[in-house]
Length: 412
Ligand code: PHE
Image (tube, rainbow, N blue to C red; front, side, top):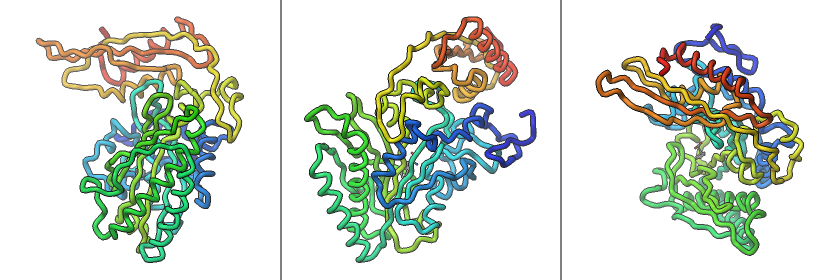
């Protein structure tokens, strides 16, 4: 780092040996696509907010949070892999970019809200391909009830109302038990109430899914949704949901009954409720027919002019510009290793959104010297124009020299 601080949304943070946020990531933070009018992510968010009538909405939290808030407060174990610097972006040893919107659950519950939605950008270090991008957007939603006879009555009534609505629609649900020995009721929760809350979660989300995907179902064919037992450190019972759409099962969200520890930490007493977290990009890609996740970040008018706020329309790809593949083979210095995510961040930092895909095509260890050799194939393609071979060679040259500088590799 050339300077001793990084600036994020007007605040300066000191850098240290843990810092791994990159210039390319930092440049995305102010963009807040989920709040950009007529952007597909903003439309999708709006449709979800419409479905959850009476829920409050928030979208203003800074992505910089403490690891405590992102992980510990939500009961993640100390050795959870998500904490590793290879998987998450650290601003410094004390602060990181949130990896999920659940990082704000305690804060939201602390406000005393019984029904809320929160939309935000989240950050995870990842490979590079058409459906992974290190910045994406999530909607978190939650509803809590009084753990009392009145609360029980409220859940029952809500369930009856939601069930009656779904009964009229063409949806086929593969369910799992609301609770089971492998997906248990929490200690201290009334089993009857906990089951009803899990049911309320499923009914609320099935309705939302029907609203989002129902229109695209084949004529006469029901929309298929399946609920799967899951595990999260901050919910029990827990579920994932998949939707059958255009011939494939698409995993869209994680959810469950909020663990008591979360509500206790938030100072919320005698309540029980559910929460879910859903990724916007993957859903928007199928609903709007957007073939590459980088398009959400495009500045091209040919992309933006196709969308209107509140409407799901099918994206008409403008011609796909030619791909240009470049390989880089190198020896790692002895006794070192290179995480794929470190390689990908280096490429992204150098090539930005001109890189479509990165694949490891060879990995071998020399039997005598024990040295490791790696070969990566980088696919360069602009979404907006044709790249010249000279231009790509120049970028590839920069990737190669960065590799030498940062990791001391020997090019083969
Ligand atoms: N935060 C979880 C994720 O990103 C999703 C989740 C949210 C699960 C709320 C349960 C409850 O995978």
